[in-house]
Length: 370
Image: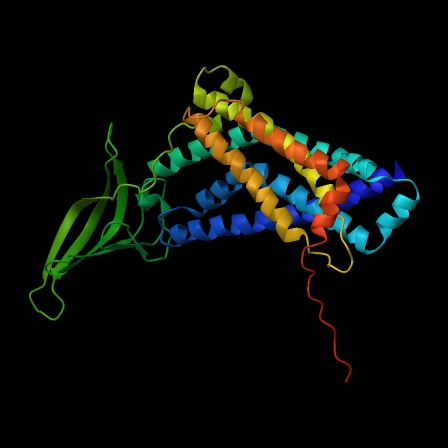
């Protein structure tokens, strides 16, 4: 148990570190994409943060297996280079027992992946649908920031407000709008304004009260000034549309209640992900055996390519299964093939070890003596 706890701690710490880095990289890419829309005033900051947060469970379903795979490679590879594995093997710990220890840690990750796929990710997708619906119903006026000039998407209109007096009422308002064809600029200033939503329609208006409208062409003196009690214009529709219902938003119990090929394919996919975690762990243990002359990261690139091949075959087969082009047991054939590969690497290790030792060694750089 002491050896099991030590190896499990090494694997899980490496897995946590790799998963955190991969998640941070992917989430940062998503966040940067949404922040461009938030900076333009098209999306609210709350929507951006919540949208990215709700995507994390779905990301972790595929990041965790890769993190565990790399975690085993890094943890066991370090122990081979530092001769810890030599000591363990001298104490009677065989490669097969090392695989069993790694599978013990992988079982916890497999349970977490199964939970995320069957319940965690569907819950996040449902919350995402609600979030998209609320955001699509909000006009750009709802995202105005007090004391800031903001452009409306889909129009040449800039608006400024001193602040919101209530959810539908605004304080001092300045609106500037230009006409591309004539070059005419109109400026409207009003003491107050309010939002008006037309019932049974997506049309939204802003009605300005007690203001003045100035119209003219820059460089010309024929400007017009019109005072008004009320002046309204239509707001552009939201570019964000509510997402259609997706099988990703259904839990495993909800999927079982629907009799369709697409839903059955999704069930097979969710059930196969925990097996992916266990099988890649069995592959990672023999591939982590490193010759000190090759360097610590000699097998990292071929290992990642093997994992990407495995995952690509699974995702491609899932898409074909949803279209009805492949039978529903295709995923399990792929798992069986890679399980056979893992068993051959464990029980015919000399053949694979000689093959891996033919890989080019990583170049080493030594400081020249001055």
